[in-house]
Amino acid sequence: MNPADIPTVRLRSRVSDAELEAKVGKIITDADYNLVATGPLRVLKPNGDPLMIYLPGALLPVVDQGPIYEILHGLRTLLTDNRGKASGTERIAKTDGSRSRTKPIASAVVGAMDPGGMQRYCRLTAWTGKNMPRWEELRPLFREVARHLEAVVPDRYAAQAAEAAKTSPEWIIPGTPFSTITVNNSYPTGVHTDKGDLDAGFSTIGCLRRGAYTGGRLAFPRWRVAADLQHGDLICMDAHEYHGNTHMVCACGVRMSGMCDACGAERISVVSYFRTNVAKCGTAAEELARAQALADARTAKRRQ
Image (cartoon, rainbow, N blue to C red; front, top):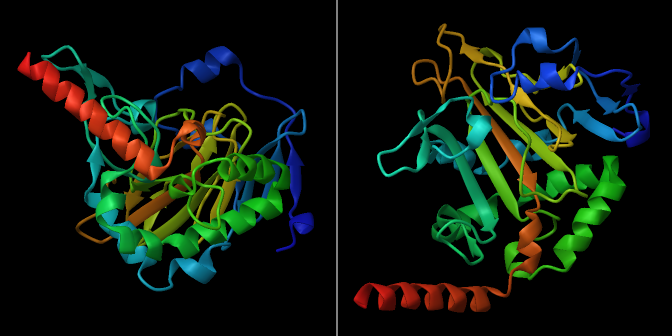
């Protein structure tokens, strides 16, 4: 579809900060939005900035090609308890004083990561490094996402591409302005904003579905708008606005938290973005040397 032909809605109002704050970390419900995009739609904030551009079917030429679905489906076994408010669950204290989530969720980060936690160096995620051929087979999907991102928000794409061009190429997905992908499988997300991605850029979510379920709508509660993503759909969005997904109920009546083992219903969301601090990474060789130096320093400290 020609970007100029996408219908446009300009928002006029928003909920109060107090009303929005009460929703943060909680699961979106159907009462939290008035407008649901089911066809192509560009939604602008009152100041004219884009909130989202919904592109139904944009990824259909690639999502069912080759092993793409199979690879993304396989990532459902990677669980995390560190998704913050996006997990939609409450934290509990561990005996060592650290904090964790009460419920692990099927969410995997693949591609490049900047320094964080104990890993104070840039690196590919563990799955990526161990599955390079599989990682490379996903590239047609990410290139298709990038193509649509450039078409519908060229200024945001250009800002992101400029940062990617300044980054050591080991950390960038070839043919895209993305460094990192988060793959979520079939769980509702609490109201949250994304952190760590480029402020001047724009985020994207591609959707892959199997089986029958209701719900899973992506909503922006501040603006009371939502989109009902189907298989092969793409949404380009301002991920620094609060957003979340509604609960999903599969055809056999189970409220889903992960793929339904009984009927196979599944919703995979593929979030593509550029992590701001990846631009500060050295080459792969430099980061490997930094990792080794840190490991040597820890070993020496233990021997003291």
